[in-house]
Image (cartoon, rainbow, N blue to C red; front, side, top):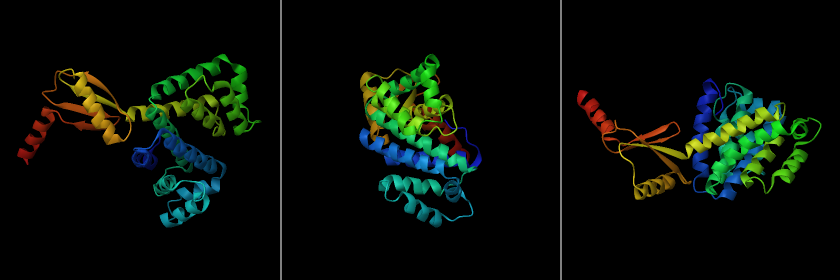
Length: 275
């Protein structure tokens, strides 16, 4: 995931929670629409240093930033996406460029969520890694996509022509957006950022369950259904057998832990008695 510091790290963490809420229960096509809109916002911010400074200036109040966002993006974004961007500019960013990086990650995660809804997220992750090998093996393609003499839209058409039908639709869409938002980055560096974004969403939708005993198929299915309902997206679970668990289970989503083990409840009881 993005290696941001200070305020930017906290802001990214907060806005990802907002993104979770916006994507909850959406169809694959709707998640893709959110992703495309966020990429368009990223392009706008990339192309204008004045706009970046205006929406990240800590001395500028949120009302002014909100009015600016509405004026620029109000007619091109769906209400839900506009609200997400509005909440994003209300946060504090250590550097003006950090907000661009954060929007890119949100856009990548939104398309990764579309892939997850289609049960193709594993394939998309593998295909992006595979594309990095294609670049190594095909120097002409790498140079063409890295060239600053060609437009992002033309490069996107090249991606679509070559890889449609070979890669999953979400992979092709991500690669099309990748060559549009390169700016001064090499395609290899930008691809790493996209892979990190997909992996971050993958981890957010993968539950690691810690249990003393193996779960039955019925238990796995029931737990997966419960977590899917909670997240509003398909959740995939993997089970870790841990003899130190007295009873119950621990469920871990990325950096969030839901601890229902007996040992944890006993520890909580002990702390309460000690007060």
